[in-house]
Amino acid sequence: MVESWASSPGSRASMRANRRRDTKPELAVRKLVHATGLRYRVDFAPLHTHRRHRADLVFTRAKVAVFIDGCYWHGCPEHHRQPSANADYWAAKVAGNRDRDAQVSARLVDEGWTVLRFWEHENPTDVAAQVVEVVRG
Ligand SMILES: [Zn+2]
Image 1 (cartoon, rainbow, N blue to C red):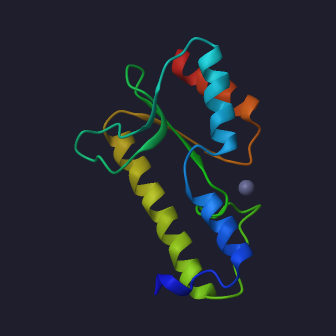
Image 2: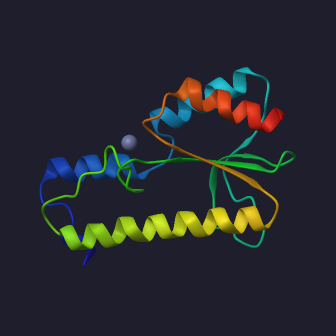
């Protein structure tokens, strides 16, 4: 049923743009954190046993995993808008993503990791400051 999910070329393009990693906010956060001298892995699975559970920035020694969640795909309360076409499909999709996010976080915490989650709309300077504080802490 995936083929009909975007009803116009415009919405299709914006959904596609939202899907991938290396978004502008994420790059901005990475750059700011890097400038402080901290080093991290990008799009990396913190747990060997769960290779599909990738975080956006991973500090292996400090055991801190950072996720910068897309407003659209992860259902940001401020920016997520239900598309009028295939609304049920999209509601279920976003709910599924949120469930998975929660499971991934819980698993990491169980394994002794600190999990930081941010929305992509958050100010990169603030996000980077929080990341640095936790990693250095
Ligand atoms: Zn948002």
